[in-house]
Length: 129
Image 1 (cartoon, rainbow, N blue to C red):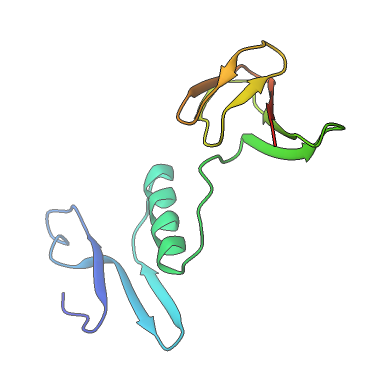
Image 2 (cartoon, one colour):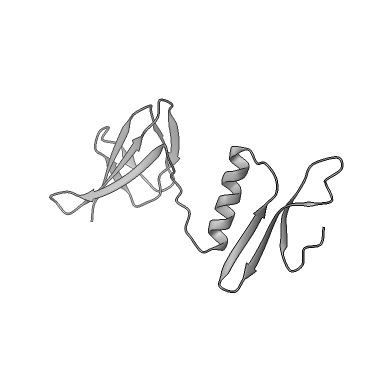
């Protein structure tokens, strides 16, 4: 149970092992290390990776695969953001950015809007610069 000077990030949820650390973390020198001594489901593993990246000072993107965001500039000097859904399932994402115009629907997008990408769909937003 004691792993000083490391931090225990998770304990086992088990009748006999609950007193033991399942995930530990330790900062050493300029680095950081974590020991994963258990099996995690997909969501648990994603949460662990986000925490490790945060500790390492690495920004975690809000949008992840199968949603891909690319950007470019049009002939008017405005930013165009392309949101692609590379899957056969619909996905939601939260738009983060300045007010924009959806070039396909004509609707406005504002920071914090929840947007749906249908399967294999694209959303094109124009941000006036």
